Amino acid sequence: MYTVIGKANSRATRVLWVLEELGLGYKHIPAAPQSEGVVSFNPAGKVPVLIEDGTPITDSTAIIQYLADKHGDLTFPAGTLDRARQDSLTQFLLDEFDAALWMAARHSFVLPEELRQSAIKQSLIWEFTNSQKTLVQRMGDGPFLMGDRMTVPDVILTHCGQWARIAKFPVQEDRLTAYLDRMFARPALRRVMEMMG
Image (cartoon, rainbow, N blue to C red; front, side, top):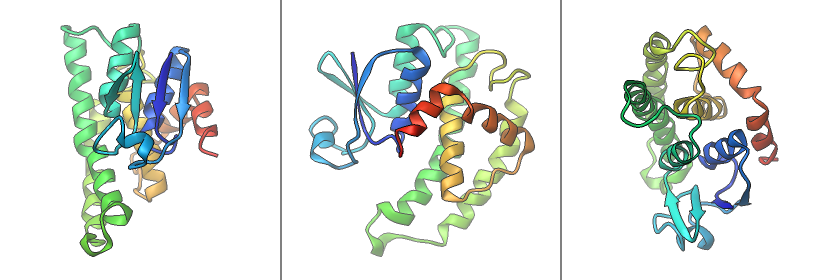
């Protein structure tokens, strides 16, 4: 039994969704970042945290890749060219999409008010929009990023797409919009979205 710490409307979405996709049992503790229940497992106070056999694992990407590897689904095997392509796509999404959204969040409500730079959001939206053009050229021909098989990058991109809608970052590529609509309709993700209230 896994334990997931972190509110469902955070990067914990990714972990909860993977657990639902894999049909695995888990306990969910919807703790807020920096709360005592989080800091005791992750000194940085960030969520999500996955606990297995008393061992905490932090960072949503590390967690979901671990679960995919352990359960042999949502990933290509390590040491294969497909896995190298998958990992490359994961890093691209973290650098170009997740990083822009996280920087905008930091300057909107995370950092102390006197350190926030609200004007930065426009440059981040420009980067986010420009990165979509590159992404659609890297997308496979199937329903998922890498073709016919859902993988870890699909989880990251879909969560970033959900985050972008909330943060009012425009998704301007039609192919990406259609992809996100398909992914948002997945029953496992819809179950996680219901946890958000």
